[in-house]
Image 1 (tube, rainbow, N blue to C red):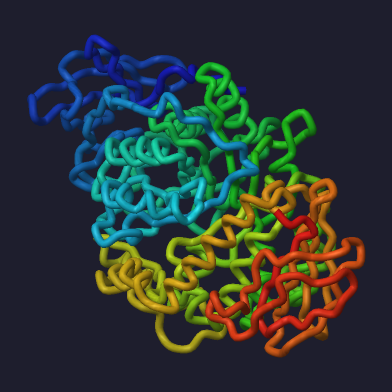
Image 2 (image 1 turned 180 degrees about the vertical axis):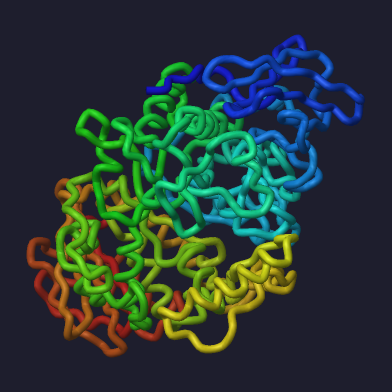
Length: 614
């Protein structure tokens, strides 16, 4: 097992307090390595060490200087562990001293994971300016909304200025056009000052195609396995230890040098590792050591498409020790329950029946036969509710639609309110996608800015092929077009108009109720019961904490439906009715109802009652 010195990054260029640069490069196949500083006309020879590492210490390289590595006298290449690429992915690396940033978050207290209410943003489209500095100006808005954690889509340097972030090619480098390393540090500092945790989306399952020079330095990839993006990262083949160390160092850097609170690791089911100690477990163990040294708590959250609780089980129970995972199946079930099409992988889901199962069991497929996959899939999980992240939309399920339509363009105003409520009353961690809280109408499209014409054309063709399984007609918007990118930016002026203002206030009220009602605030799966009716398309979800209970009545049908109130409370008191007039509805739900009485639910509505009036 690899245990790293968590006090300091041990790859790339770092500086000590006297200004001496320490240079570490992993290049196991090289015979000679030199560091070139073009601005000073300096060449520094590195010394070969064991296990393929090359090192040097010098005062010639200073923070702000541009530099290249040259291997065996051949072409000059940027640093694989570059912290800054001011001249894009093919240009020189820039040395930075990350320790020079003045942090002001000593008083920051990380939230327990159960208190996370997550808001996912893409820096480039979150504001007109598309920078970290501009995002800081929106933090008060998020606090007022009730958000406790901001999730930032990947910021590792990618080619050009337009990208979702999953084509990053320098894992240690913060996108220059967003504001670079200092810009991200400033954003985290500002978030902590306002009581917001920060989750950073990172990609450890592949590296983007343009500007990816890793293979020139060493066997970062293996032909043993393939992913949707090409050869897999080498986590278990020959020379894998240097690769594993590289990515563990990366995770530690975000926590230590950028004060990130949690990492969301993209599609970990695409990480191939048959070592006795999985790379995720090794990351967990190194992060645990860092936390012991710093006293700060950090979470590891994974996107996972395997319905395998081994990933989120603790290490002492033969798991990998991840703190939480996204569950797409909740989203799929919710989407089908709302009446949207059942094409592609959505064909496996059966509306309210699947949604009710996800409320109860987290995974919809926990050993059942999946017709879409043509196999029995998944296994049961007893993990705590706080280990699952749910949503009605996210960057994938909006942006991977051919036209990038948000839910606000696909369902009615009333159904949008129901979907929001369905997420926020769940016994899991809720996540919002930027703009959904006010019914943003602009699409979130797939966009890139590759400079290689052949690669750009491959991306266009790939997008068209992707939608064949969904039987989509027409052509996808050009991912390379600037217009595609600008169309995807949030239209903040919308919140001053109806019905967006009402929707925003509705979300605020929902979030406030979740925070103030213990049965909703505490994601305890053991005190959840759920009933559903496939004919009426009604779900009755009951959440309890001790004697305190909240009952959530959801009508996914387009007609009024009658339900009987639970009989184990003398009276039920309304917390919220999405059909109420104040939320743009047409039917005021009663403020108090008796035990066992019949209640008529408005079409496409959610109503919340509690047995304790406070």
